[in-house]
Length: 249
Image 1 (tube, helix red, strand yellow):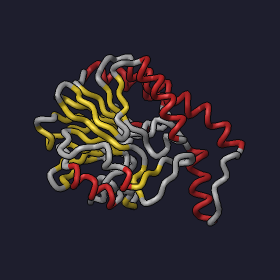
Image 2 (image 1 turned 90 degrees about the vertical axis):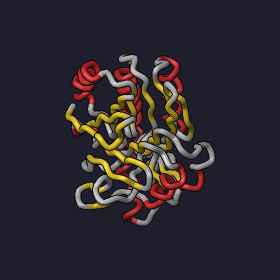
Image 3 (image 1 turned 180 degrees about the vertical axis):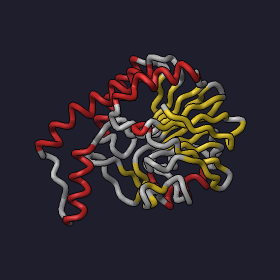
Image 4 (image 1 turned 45 degrees about the vertical axis):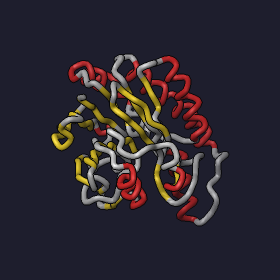
């Protein structure tokens, strides 16, 4: 199985045409998307400002309300483009694909419209005999679903079984390179524990936008394709997981 991996689109609509062309050129057997279709900048800025200022974040800000429609448009436009290629697609939400209930509502509509699209957040599916599971958002110690999607690790293992073929995560594990973004490590040690317990053959992750690469963790090959908003993607054969090709869209 030939797999194409992308992550962190963040509403970069100028790349949709070239992404579609690349999909037609490569014709992968499976396309995986590791989250952050929405921009989410207004929500994210308020969340971070509240953290710095030690105050509760404010939901009802004009810029947050104004960004809601744009975020929804990003999500619909992105998956409408992907879904039109008839390639099997599995996806999870990123930490900026919030609020979670809104994301799930829109994705249920899109999955109905595009039968080749499957959401694997907190579940697993079978794609041509290959077991694929996932869990989206940022895996940390706290819970937040409106400003950013954050999930504590103790909620994750309930619906996923060990020895998956492919595991999709938005959060990367703590590693040497694939979680290193502009000098700061963005991985979570909870993800390392999660990968050890699930023992997947291949792990795809994102979140660290400039950390394109792959590394071995326990028995798993962990791949960060880099941010799609910068034109990054990855190709790998399931049967040869350490032969990863990185490409530009």
